[in-house]
Image 1: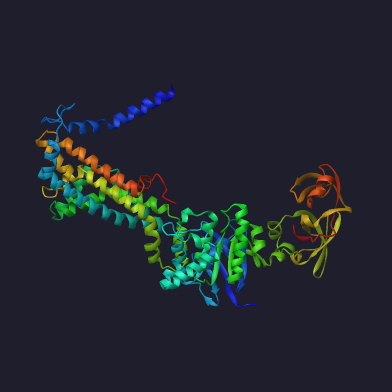
Image 2 (image 1 turned 120 degrees about the vertical axis):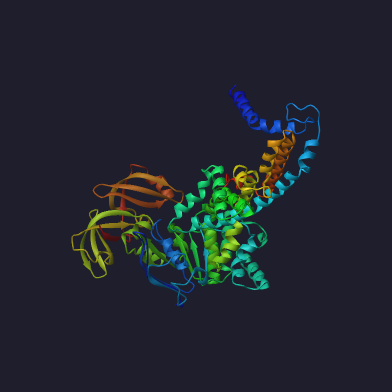
Length: 265
Length: 354
């Protein structure tokens, strides 16, 4: 009896979580020109429309560029800071740590608005550097956290052993620390890229027509049209993210990326 | 006597307000196997880390092979270290792990391959050269760590409780193997352990440590039979302690009284005492045996261990005395409650200030 109730609860929870996804995906295949549920005639036309719409194409490319550069920068900065926080004691360490984790608690529109004001003040238009740096700020806390956990899980005696075997500190970082950290770096990068790729609120403030990311392009689209292209692109979004995660899981192990396993052999 | 491999001149180390190591003096000859023995927190690992260069001494100097190394960084000291957790590089196979120190030294590929092969043969792991460390058993990982430390031909081999993660049988096997390899190569070895059996069975000399001090540095026999300090006598081996008094000193030996009897003990630990002062007499259980003229008591408990048995004997007016008797004899003659007389003819008692 309790087993049945429990299973029903789990099923309801799953249904509740997945319902919007399922509805959006199904609506994408409707031949009619308005988003409606349930769909009536099966059609690929909205996928064709979504894939051929120029703003979406530009937005997709822009999103990929921003995600790639921003997450790479975030991993480099986050890696350095996480290493410093983990290995050294210095003045202002706690302040630095909380400052870098702060964006977790600050609304994205505040960050976007702030970035916009600063950019205007120093005479920057809403160009690539502003968009990318805003994304770096947004994803840095996540990257920092993930790399910090990965570093904590490296046995410090691995580095000690390498030093005792005659390797200089620089060589130890390259041949022992970085390889041991590789899953954490890759996971942190991927996590940052997915967050950046999906980011909307702050991007809305800092992007211009030329630099608009895919979520911004989608928002601009729904302000003018109400056809199922949106549903189609949502379905594509989910498909892409799923493929990336499946590949990542295959090569890295999701447990390690999400920090639920400690990554030690 | 060989030449000097390691010398510590009054090395001290503090962590905040804690004196982790206080003025350690140590001289190790070439090819010697010296164990740092003590309970956790005694400073033995601190001392090892100072020798290795992972810690910087607050005072004193360290010499390795006659060279002053106090300020030399770890990677220039040319030492082989084996860690308790093995610390094998998880992203490298066995051969790569063993060859790491050779690559760091810029040894040519052909030469490195030959020496890695040689080192793996030494620890009988040639067949596993291509394995990852996580595919190995604990004992195999231990051997890889040993080969990795030895392949660089270190001036000193440093071992930090290397066997504590292994089960008992494997540990005994690895002890014998390590000792054989160490003797074959003649490599000077500093071994850290809290296991007195391990220290006694493997070492040429043992440094017994407590609270940041080296209390005694001697052969295993010296540590056991002529402890210089009450802590050494109680930490190494079992002992029964009986309260008593110093009667008088006669040069190298002294006369003490305990449990109504007189015992001759070495004078050295009692130098500072006045006659009549309180002492503690230490007696090894295997040096005591049932004798007709002995001290009368009753068997309070008996632990049968096969080859031998341990009897705890209640002696009125003296307390409880532990003695070891052959197992068969214990079963037949000394059940709990049986009267027994303890003889001291083979005893090698030592006494310390109470």
